[in-house]
Amino acid sequence: TAGSISVTGEGNSTTTNLQLGLVKCLSRFNSSTNAVIGSFNQSSRTDDGTGLSTTSFTNNMGNANYFANTHCSVTAAPTTGTGAFCDSAYSETTSSVGLAYGYSGNSSGVTWAFYDFDNIKFLLHGDLA
Image (cartoon, rainbow, N blue to C red; front, side, top):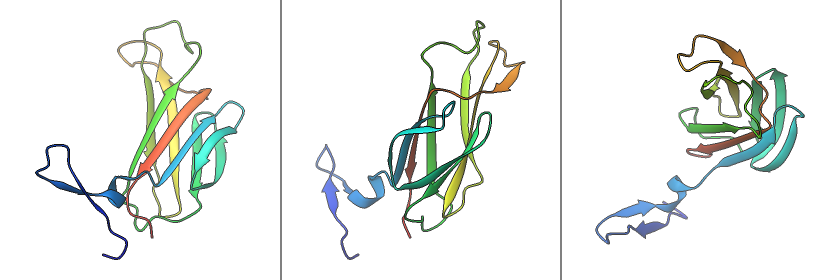
């Protein structure tokens, strides 16, 4: 393939296609203030309500079968319980992806709440168009 680069793995017995391993979009943002702290290949970020947002890509993906990974963190816990933070990608299209984030208020996950975290990190891997 034109522009394709193969890299020899650590054990010198396999090769990896470099382009497939590169991040195609990334963003770090504060969902409370809607401030983007840093991004790559992100044309816009829309606040869709508490704990919901949409990230649009500058360069579209080749298909919607990409891998989207999000991570939430806060400077102080949103609850005094021992709950878990949770984040998820949804509505994957070639031009954007929806992100949802929140927490459970206790370890059993009985109480769920969407939440605007102050530090969300998002990475996307897949094929560009």
